[in-house]
Length: 252
Image (cartoon, rainbow, N blue to C red; front, side, top):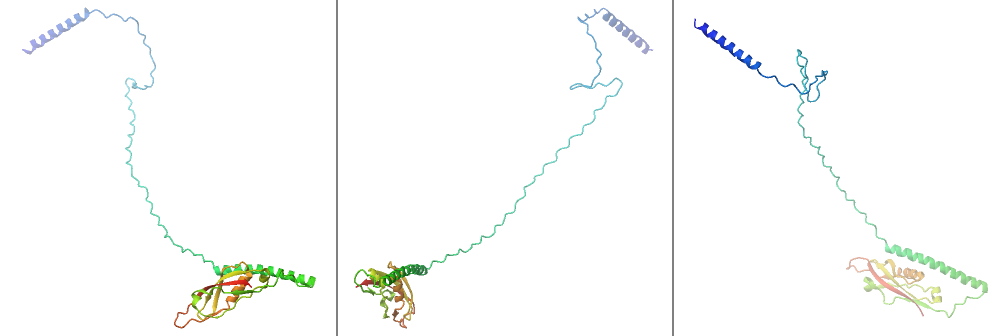
């Protein structure tokens, strides 16, 4: 019985509140109209541009944008070491023996030079002899010598020097003075070196100082090869000894 009067009182209070609210809004002045009318234009719908969102039609579900694939994380870089080059084994250095050039044989060179000069001198002497013979045959008398005939001789001067200086000499042969040298008044000195074996025989002769006339040098060498020396005593070592000698061509 007590709940009904409370509900009635609440209903009356609510209706009174609504009536007061309606009166309040009815007496409120209207807002001023806009100064310029705004024309509404119906634009066709276009795809949303940058910064616009797509508006679906009413009653249609909003389309779901396709899910973009998530970029895969880049694979970690692997460190690749450059291939190490194996050390190149060097071939062992081969030392090639250098060939030593043979030393020139001075004796052979001197003999060749002497022989060449002797050949030229012999040719010259042959020409002189042929001219003298032609003169004799053509005139019937001997050619003029230009003066009295001179005699010449050869001597050893100071004798033998060197190791052979104290060795005895058993036989000596001196060269003959060439006739053309006597006629032309040629005098000269020839220095020779000689090697003698233990038995006393001459094994080798060479010219140390030329006389200037190859024929005189040749005759001196040929004569010195015929010399004979005393053999070495048994108490001494059997070795080859050498010596030097100068032969003098002199006119009397």
